[in-house]
Image 1: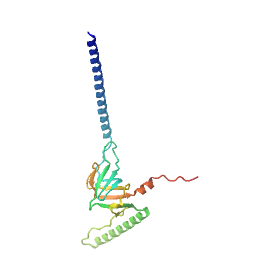
Image 2: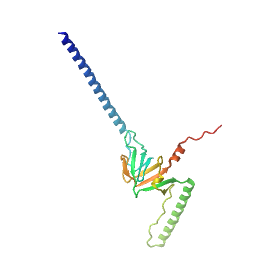
Image 3: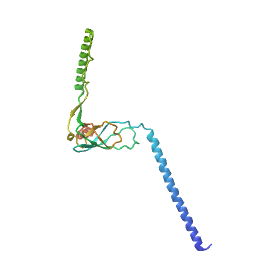
Length: 203
């Protein structure tokens, strides 16, 4: 074998070895990627799926004349890649309200008044039945709720406010939809105030 042939043989062997190593490495990386993706999918199945929902709670990111963009809170399967930022169209038919939780004393008084009214209606209904004749079904007042709603305008909602957005269909995976109701749950200033640590008393 001549020196030229020997050099050529060595070069071919080196190239063949390097190419085989490169392709082998690429194959190993691809196999590792596939194994990783399969493991992630397996872990994801161990979590219960996020149920279909028509309402989401989150923080307002932008408020325009006829739309609101907000970042939704999601609870449940952390392996599901759901889009959290959603843009909501607000129509003339969209109900915009502020939800306020009344104090326990007020709610308790309303609950007792409701129960008293129900007892009165039932007593009158029983008396009418004893008299005979056709007696219509009793009509009861609405049950009191600790959450009170008052109508507001969309401009009352500002960036950083906590809101609840409701649609007429499942919106968990949608990035844009029309709201039938938007509830202002807390102002940004209230959220910051509640998140602030309590002052440590001086000893």
